[in-house]
Image (cartoon, helix red, strand yellow):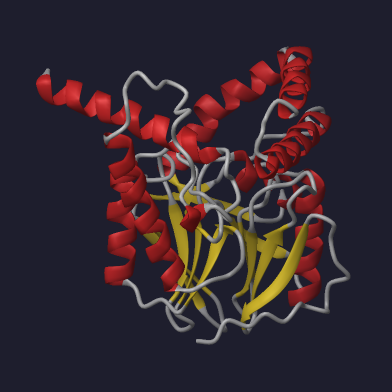
Length: 329
């Protein structure tokens, strides 16, 4: 299947995302860096129902996403599918309630109802503290020597401020329908297979597969032109999931969690990155706490989320130590 790059004209536009039709009736909503929102989304026309995958970080972006879905398909959104629990993929859920049914894995719902809800309550009770942290982060940006990282940090600050601004009206909206391995959503035009092979990028990562189109909306298991984010990751499980996706599914097109629509080649690039990072982390000097001697390889130098590179290595090093202690214990 050829990935189409045409900009969709049926929707007037949003400051938060750009629309691209990736297959007939399947649209990627690609996040605009620095807009105050994060995370891609997708709109899938099932024929007699509309399904949206992920809802971005910003409530206004989610309002625009709902409007786009309604204009493109001519009907209200019937289903919202969350690929994982991170805020840049679920915070806009409330903009589709109460009409839509929300779907995710049971584990995603559990995390949202547990630690995510607890963190939200803390942010509400200590909003001034949160604002102070963001203010300090903004000051710290100017101490960063890498201009590309400084720009990305500014984008992150904008997203954090957008989140704080919407806290008073924000409502955590949980999925009412859950599954453990897979479920199907059938429409008159096409059927969508909702799947999970476990957790790699997060505690539970789900994705949507359209068999006829050989297209997957994959969340943050694949990022296109971005460093994979490992703050909640298990990179070894992540690798297994990517291996299984490629082995079991025919894929021509991917709508990633961040970046432009891509092909199976990008999944392979992410897999190569994970293997490289695991190998690099294993050889790091344990006394080099800040990884001052580590630089981003040229191959990944143009990828966004540059500030995650060293964080990823630290995460892998920490997990490797835990794995060794577990084996010894």
